[in-house]
Length: 400
Image 1: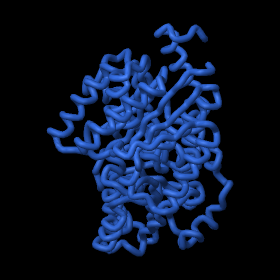
Image 2 (image 1 turned 135 degrees about the vertical axis):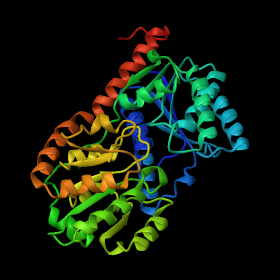
Image 3 (image 1 turned 45 degrees about the vertical axis):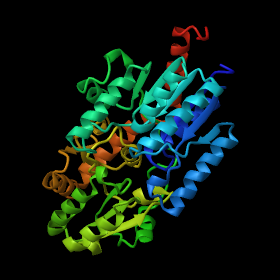
């Protein structure tokens, strides 16, 4: 496969699921003798804490050391900006014409639209897109959502394959008639599971690090503190749970633009002494080790890397029935699914878990078994096979 040039395009590199998936894919493919480049935006919209920014920088440096070219487009931003968007489109088109990649693989919605149109203008033979979720609900008002659906339909015409992280995400794209069924392929996002081993980190030590007494029940969530992750509903549910089990502690791990707002909401609800905001931390497994129940109240989710990590740690999950989450959480087996933004259902399910240790143990064990199928090697092998099939179909190579 020597000499096959692949360019990945993504707006921002942080420690979120879509960025980590992109970097894992780029690094894994480089190890399989592809010539890989990554075009990224400036990432200043991520509101990353300094530790997260440093960790993202280390990930990029490691990728460069492995032979992947990293290119920054200063105009490739997440928000709509007509002037910057045009500049980014023209810059990427020129870059593709110079690099002459056989494959352009775009990631996330904004980079997906600009990158695919640029690839078409530069006559790149193969275009692949991974949305990592979608913006069809939960992000924008009705008219804006319709606009994005139209853009996705137009961009899909320029795309050879669209990679879905879950079958649930695939069904959503088909329901919104983004493209014909044959354009979609499901490849689960790979998750580096090595650190997430139950028992590797002592629960008592993990709780001590967070200032939680050993005997207190602990409910935790992991994710960027942004509206789409639904943390306000978890805090409202926490208020209800604490009326029944006042010794419970809630841990919300992550950073983001809503951190101050969520702390203010906890204060307004009078539950600030029971809610812990550790910020962003690189050692997610060390925090998960303190949890009894993992909560994931997201309003929209392509897959949910944090859910896989929690499952790998043997935690039962209470999560929203949305997007690709039902592909991970099987109702009654390794967790419970609740309607989005339903505070009462979320609180009721959490209480049910906290009151039944045996249920938690059984669900956690099943989740641990299921999580084992989401490793990175499987994802990279499937992406490689997809690339090979497309290269053969286009007559670019005869390899098998």
